[in-house]
Image (cartoon, rainbow, N blue to C red; front, side, top):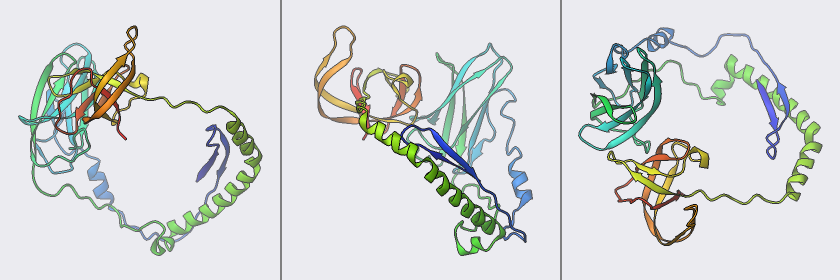
Length: 299
């Protein structure tokens, strides 16, 4: 095992210590190697056999859906959108660059953009190239229990039963060595850490940056586009409030928002795709945003 001492003020690695331990005897674990090997084998059809395909026509709940597209045309970027059949947009699966004759493969975990588990039903995967839908395919999630594969006896780490196994004894021996060496390392770097803390206390505080933007577009599939992206620190999975505002004042030259009064919150979106200067979100509730609405991080 290896542990590092990191200065939380500067992110500098101050020291690194290593320890190892061993124990002889018979392990208390049992592993079904045949089951493990079987899980590493393809469980469905070839998703790269041509066109847009799923590896199965139907899936159990919680089972990963594999989607593939073999590109017969010129090289370009493709992405997958997941919909409930005849229903709303659920999830965007990331862009992939697929060369001529190449195959792009996507994986869907049966959750929507808000990380909510989807139930049984018919679903549609749509292949999008940035300007139009190239192909669609339907598949089904059937009721029933999801795949269960107990591969190893369960022994809770830190329990008395675990401590009596040779694995537990070896780990405990290693941890004892590691802790002792970490203490020695902390003592050695304490003077440097004190200097860093003193320097930080004397330096002026950096003012907090408020992240806010506006709704830039409303797409036909229901996605909400905002005018800030990775350049502003937006990340996939971020939640933003869409505000109901009045008395909005913007800079006439730059268009930057200078001031506004908040009347309330219209609703919330979760970001499903981020680019340099824009981000794409989906609504987590039923509300009606309009272009120009101000957005800011939830919480």
